[in-house]
Structure formats: structure tokens, C-alpha cells
Length: 234
Image (cartoon, rainbow, N blue to C red; front, side, top):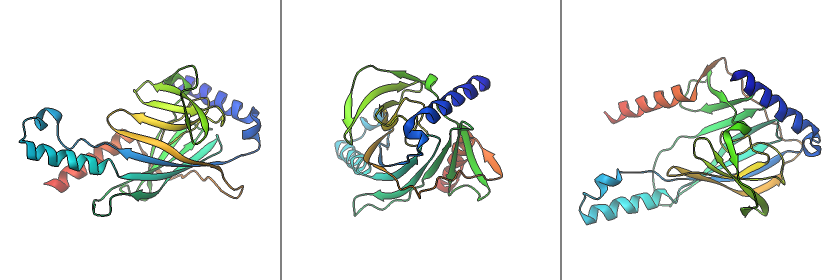
């Protein structure tokens, strides 16, 4: 499996190098907004509540759905960084939040993620998503930021829209592996990430991949984060 993934990454790299856009080191800067749909209470328990509490829960969920996390993806198809920029929320809403920045290195087929909740010498490492993880749908599905986009479905159930007009196999967060830049991702019941600005970045923009001495998996990070949240609630 690891050998197959390495072959796929090599093929992606060769295709990128042979593509005139990649050969010119053209760098794209894409601003994304991410809207999360948190489930405050289980639907089966919700119907057991009195009407006034049901309304309150629905109001809270509606308020959270208006919170937008703004990220900037800078990518040349060989490496990229997906960095948190800002959060847009209702003015009367106070809440704490955490974010993760993601870096992709297509040469090593790695996604490296940094979180403020980790020690400064530790990073999260995972494998890049490859073409084998997607099912493509023929035809133009929609237009996003003036780019014609096609639809794809991941093995894990994420729905993505990508444009072959920007032929680099990258996208927001940890998503990659399609024959064009991903401009929208929907993870049903969890979140939606949508591009709202696409531009060619300045030649002076640099994409540096972090290299911290210690590395953990995303599964271990999520597990440790869950334990921390439980301890705070006690």
C-alpha cells in the first residue's frame, strides 16, 4: 500500500512538472470560508424536550451556522499551505475556538499540520489523499469564483467540486488528489468549505514546509484533544 502511494505521488509530481502552469511555478492564492454545523443535542433527545427548549436549541444551532472561519490556501501544485486568517461571527457571540494549519508536500506525499494546542516541537503528520480515493462524475456541475467545476465523491463520503482550469491536485484543508484545484468541499452533517476568492499570488510568496522533531498522527491528536476537553468539563 505504501509502495503504491509512493508511485501515485511520483506520477502526480511528474504530471505537475510537465504542465506549463506548474513549470512556471505559478502560485495560486485562494481564500476559503468554512462553516461548521455543530449538533448541540441528539435529534432523538431533542424531540423529547418542551417546545420552548427546542426553539432555543434551534436558535443556538442557527447562530453557530453563521460563524465563518476564513483560511488562505497558497499552492503551486507541489507544495502548499492552508493558514487560518480570521473568523467572522455575529457581534454578540462570544466563544473560544481552535484552528489547525495544514501544509502539503507532494514530493513526500505528506500532510503536516500545526496546532497551538500541541507542544512547539511537535507536528501532526498524515498521508496525502490520492486519486484512488475519489470517484469522478462526468460533466460540468457548477461554477465557483467564475471557474467551471466538476463533482467528485471521496471514499469517506466527502463531496468536492474541482476545476480543471487550474490543473493542480490540491485543495483546502487536507483534501487533494483530484485533476484540478478543489474549490468546494461538503462533509455532510459536519462542515462546508467554499472558495470565495481565487487569485495568482506574487512571485515573492514562499511556501515553507515545517519540520519539527516530533510527529504524531491525526488520530492521536484528536484523541488527546478529546481527553483535554473532558478534563476541562470536570
